[in-house]
View 1 (cartoon, one colour):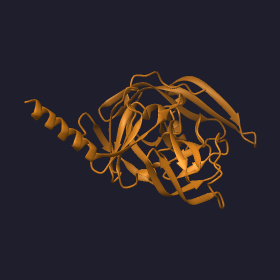
View 2: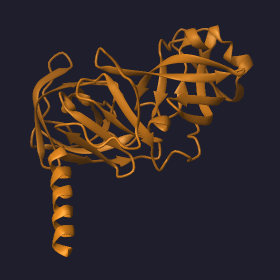
View 3: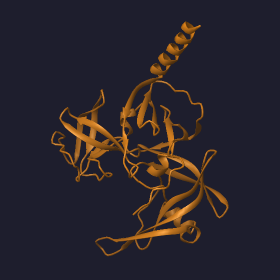
View 4: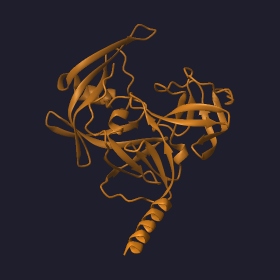
Length: 282
């Protein structure tokens, strides 16, 4: 009997190893950003922020660590290698002088997962890369829209007791919850309908005001899962620059995510952060 149990466990472990080809550890900052330790061109040890809204990589002008072995021409560098854990990725393109999140020297995008099913596992602080679909027990799914290297999903806002579909760009570089597009914010009169909790004003070189307001959205529905009292930002004032709505890092961390290899479906289930307090934008 014990031999049969041991054999069964061995088969289960073997199947899991066949499905999960590799894992990449990461850490999460207090600003909800994912940081991956990398070795670039076998020389530069860099901490790169995972940016789900891009495919390539970039270096920040405000980086902490040196990146002397990435050679740029017109702010683009091709043919680089990135080593993460024991895996080396070839022909990585870097862009220069792109701002990134706190504690990071630059950004790394989803290109390292090209053609593969991958999981963002916030419970275990790791990416998991698969050759075939893993066990999806406990997961919901929703269509994934892939355009110009960026991912969009549809979620339902519940505002004034009315449910409204919104297309959200998955944006792991934005530390907060929701950031609405100008079109949605103006069309739905969010200043009147959301409970506003804060405001921040900046001025550009022309003296025009850039004002962001933070409010609370009562409900957001993703599939059959409902989030309550979500932090939601929007722009007001003379200058508005937000063309799309963001599903930010504070919402992303509340789920574990599996992206299919074709980038047509995304699977999700609540993570250990689902009921954590919402991030406050200063």
